[in-house]
Length: 112
Length: 180
Image (cartoon, rainbow over all chains, first blue to last red; front, side, top):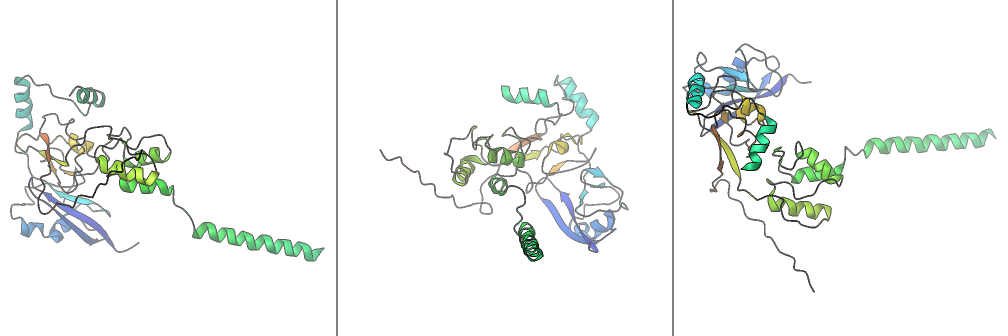
């Protein structure tokens, strides 16, 4: 309908989450959204070579085109090593739940 | 003969046009009661009422299938408002009332599995596969749906501490005493 689309750029820290709503021309890319958001200036620790980008929990390349109402997300690397975490939990005798087992989860909730 | 047919035809056309105009002009989108009920519900989409979300619950209330006291996040205040709107009796909540809370992820333990993101009904978790997951406090409704799917138990709920930014006047509650 119009020449612009509205997207959000989000950078989340545990204590503070920065959400920047933007109006961008149709066909803008993930990188353009990040640059227009001003987050790079505000948070100097964001390094586009290191921090991965994505749209709604899916990793996206910086030159991927955006669609209207998209939420561009700037991710941070993990602190824990997934393999180590799993090993450690196995050693402690804790069970790893696989997936969101609905039935199992519900019976658990009832006993608590 | 022809004149009377013409008069009837003219009348039919006129009334038809009036009805057509009215159906466009005074069109009611969906059930207005459902919308009013939904406006009272807290939109946590948590499913604690036994329905898949706030809208299905609102439809069930409007259809007379569900009770009005099944929404724990709405609390007693929500029950009271619903009773007001629907002219039903105020009932005690069918669960214990909890303080408002948000989910917090322990960053030292998160393994980036995305299971909590898939569980979140309001897109309040930022993260992707093998990237740090973070909860956006302003979007989190405190529904606890992300807590159970986490395979490393790194999500906990924290009550929202009242401070100057989120303090609100308590609505006055006047208990109506039954006379005689």
